[in-house]
Image 1: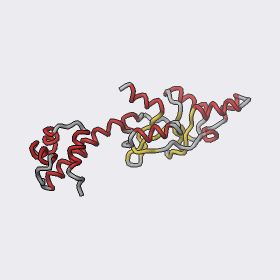
Image 2: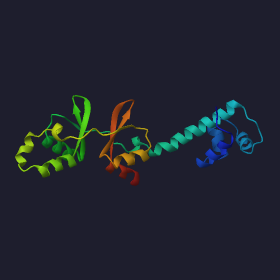
Image 3: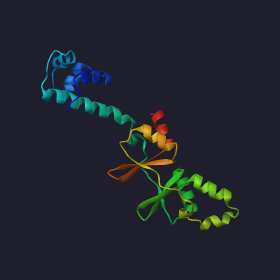
Length: 188
């Protein structure tokens, strides 16, 4: 079932499309769109379907500006659960990250952040014992996962509660978003 014909003009104007441009993209005449918008014609289902399909596609193009895939970092760095916190610190420092994914074999089992390490160090009196502390001893739960097509609004909410969010495509992790990645929106 298609939306009401009145939606055509509303959606066209929101998308800042002229009648001529919508007609060109839809494969119909500009006069047909004008007649539909002024309620002077009862158009065929086929033509109305073409117009709404075009409007849907144009809306999808406009929405793609604010998606997870626009700002996610596809270079994902992780560490095995059995690694040491010294190794984790070196990886973070080397790659400029403040958090890492924790793996057990190839399965994500948690996360570790600068905060985890700092909190542990601040409680430890004997810093030499750090060499023996493994990631699994201080790691946190895994980061939330979202589809790479997720709009940015829920991502900003998640980043208020988690240091990072993982992006997925067909169930496979393809990227990571941190608070620092939100700056990509500002400096575009």
